[in-house]
Length: 173
Image (cartoon, rainbow, N blue to C red; front, side):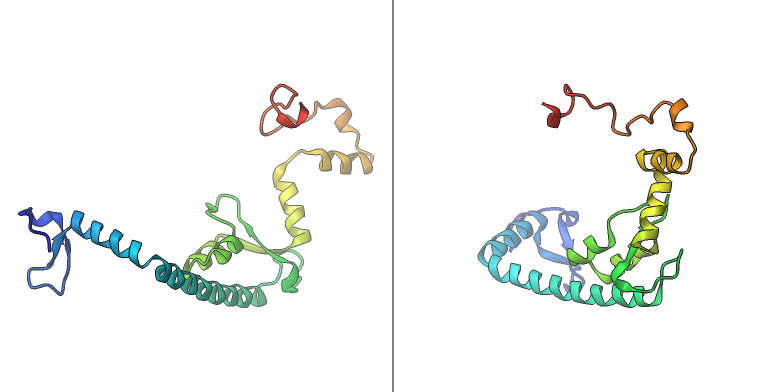
């Protein structure tokens, strides 16, 4: 119990207490919590791992059910083995959906990220991604194969990450 005489604002709220605050100040509470964690770290880690594994299992089921109901928006392929989540442009991508699942995030968090996506098969996903990228070596190759030689009169596209040379890129040394 904290024996310091501190203002009420220095204590955490506890609705079960008659006066509505904890009987130890925030600093003492923090010290007690850290000491408890240090004494019980292994048990705490086990509990977290079990909870994360359960959240991962539930999220995998939710993602699987979602994919079973949502085929590719472009070609209609419904084979879940080849379906991806493609974040819409401007949707505010926060993370890759399956990365959230792997890391044990809640189903609510995973579904919120899925809401920012369209379901596409890998082929359609790759095509849409290259269309979004604009001019690149693949589009130039496809134009040449189709007999369009515009690329000969146009300068090559500038790299998105700036120029690379032996002076600026470690792999050229």
